[in-house]
Length: 241
Image (cartoon, rainbow, N blue to C red; front, side, top):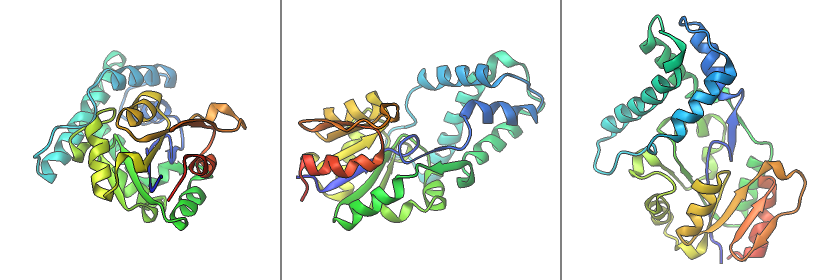
């Protein structure tokens, strides 16, 4: 019986207001680098997917984690802009970019997210976040008025492991005091959310907004849905306490 529902964050609960590549390129022009949005987006995807997850192992102090987070992102941005010339002041550009994506005003909540979380909360579910993100996620969730729904927030930089590692799911389960068999995880990545949750023994739900208005595809403890609004239907099939 499902007693807890975990959610991925970016891409699942909320998304950037403009494409990431557009933001990177637009802000870069203010610092002397003129590159096309499409070229920057392609380089960012390449740099991001070639990297190790945003996690540094366990035992770090909070201030050290914050430093490591910035260094991790700085390396991704350096790799992204390597083909596009020199910045007048790269450190100033990176500081502006890092702060830009920390501002909740530059993110938007998917329309059905808040209602879905409220309905789950009212039905007695424990709710958590499991995200490959850094400490900025706390400010974003709070600013988007989503933090109030969650009983725990597990981010990879603090847990020390990033999805698809089993350890981040185990840490999140421990924080809510539930067993894997009593939990579900909802996310938009086939590899990092759907397959990884299933491998950890958690019921897995993939949000595929490309499905349009199709009904949920549900089998055993797996489901594919077109929007978060269909999570409620999935819980009814999975069974909930």
